[in-house]
Length: 336
Image (tube, rainbow, N blue to C red; front, side, top):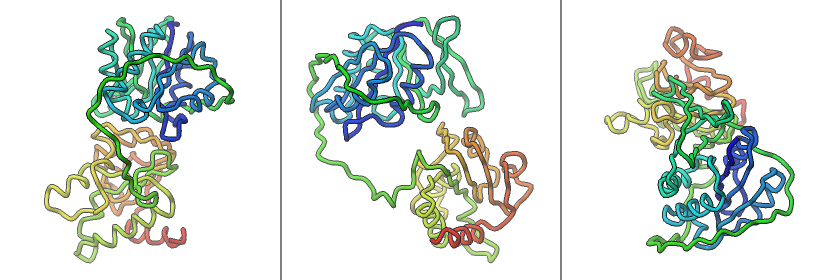
């Protein structure tokens, strides 16, 4: 197997997040001489964290200018580590930071890049990647002759590496940081209890357009729907997903859920949630939503129509009931 470089960036606390550790697992399963490259404001804690991974070398680019995500500095750091490693295959987690910078770095290195990869394996001694096409309806296996080959792995496809920490020796890679025009003055983030997207949650709760339609009494109960859903998300610490029709409703002048955005949409945007369990409510068999649930391990649905497209073969368990009544009862059981 060809030499492999695992390229990682640190988090705000200087350590490595779960997607980074998943990429280490992928590289170890692939085999071949392993080099790990680290980028961040301070990288020693991250190096110690993966000291037991068996890397031949640990290369690092550190400094205040590399602490914050920027295309210019990240691409320069990735290019420098790529040249210093001499690796033919570069694996990196598909985080927003690397997805922005690594295609440019691959171009500078004279290589190629593939994104949204879900698996890497050795075939006849050469790497081959797996990814989905056409809204996740077709799975393809690809190989490339060009080197270096930069591969961005989607999170959730591998188990995080969990080896022992230690004292790691880091080889510093010199980089002339380019001039930047941006200055990060702080971070604004919602309170933890206001967050609705939780990638590591055990349960994905998907709301369909039925929540904003007329109910059995002939009226729309938007405020009640918002209260029921938010109570459940807060109590169960579930992640919130949505069908395309619901997030598009705001542009069509229809009733909407105030906390729902296009970031919650699954399926048609290519989002592939991998939560262990999923609960669909009022989705009425919408095809984009069905496609987006392909990787959910256990799928259940609440729908008044037992013959809808979602209920017929798309869910493991279907509750033929009113979602408003069911979720109100569930919230009472949870003590919400």
